[in-house]
Length: 441
Image 1 (tube, rainbow, N blue to C red):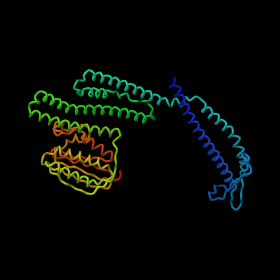
Image 2 (cartoon, one colour; image 1 turned 180 degrees about the horizontal axis):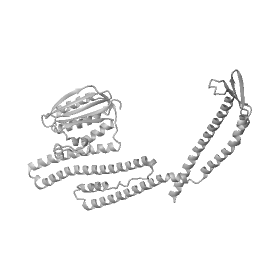
Image 3 (spheres, rainbow, N blue to C red; image 1 turned 90 degrees about the vertical axis):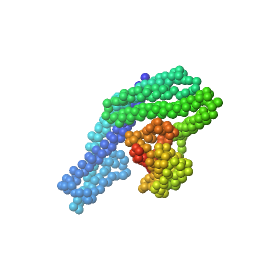
Image 4 (tube, rainbow, N blue to C red; image 1 turned 90 degrees about the horizontal axis):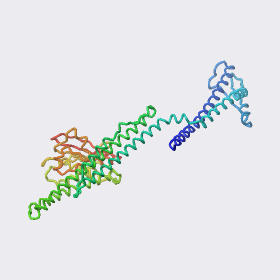
């Protein structure tokens, strides 16, 4: 009942808004009609004297007694024009009388019809609003169904958690896969449709929003599932070595040293992974702030090059084209993105291979790039290398110590600066990744 009253109230407000607009249109049309009638009347009186229209250069004057008011002032109007040295005058008293005799009833009829529309039943507005009302009801139903599914999935996940949680606190990856599958089954096929062509754009916008929500839920579930998998692996390794220490490591020095080294490696991997996850979480929530200042990309890449020459002697580090390239950027974050690219190049380039760092500037954008002679990337995998936890070769990436989040972090940094990537890669020939940043972001 409240919904019906609210709908009627909205329809009535819309109808009255339309009526006020219609009143302004009626007044404007009446004025234009009166002016057109007056112009036709004067044209007829003038051509009765001249025989033809004498042109706009003919001297003409319109006078009125300014001491009078209202209809009396209009009746005092005098139109005069000069033709062949003689002045002719036309009184508008008869025209005003004729106009008031026929215009008065017409104005009264228009006013009555307007009042009837203003205070009458808003059926017309309700009829026009009916498609929107139907669309709102459908959207509400979809929202309630989605909420019910999500509540059921949450309850199911809680039951699985209570039944399968172990004493060691292992992460149950299957729960996240179940959630992911459940989200993928959300029915977005029930598209909003009213059949009204005028509302087609609004329908498309709402249907697109539903599709993007579905994709966002799916991606979130995939991210949680991948993160749990990445954390579960080092935890399992640490648990295995702890058990081995408990059985034999107390008295076996070799087992003890192996276990300590493996646990140290896995904890460092977990630390790196957690820090990267926190960085992306802060970025997604808008808490990662930028502190832009002038940065020379060539100077930055030279610093990175010298750093890696000192810490990595297994590769041949080369300086490519280095041209001063000034941009406004957060120096710490941009350098972090450059290090991500360099780390990836070193990780996937065989020992003794060369890695080249370059920087330069164009008309609208400055750039820096990292080119390696590594294993390269398959063409079908290039569009996905910036996805979180994506690995073209999971086994090789795991052996090299990668988390699958470095390029995702680099993409977030570059996109926040308004920049973009250019990637060229071929298997067994290497990869070149260029970062372009606008000169005036």
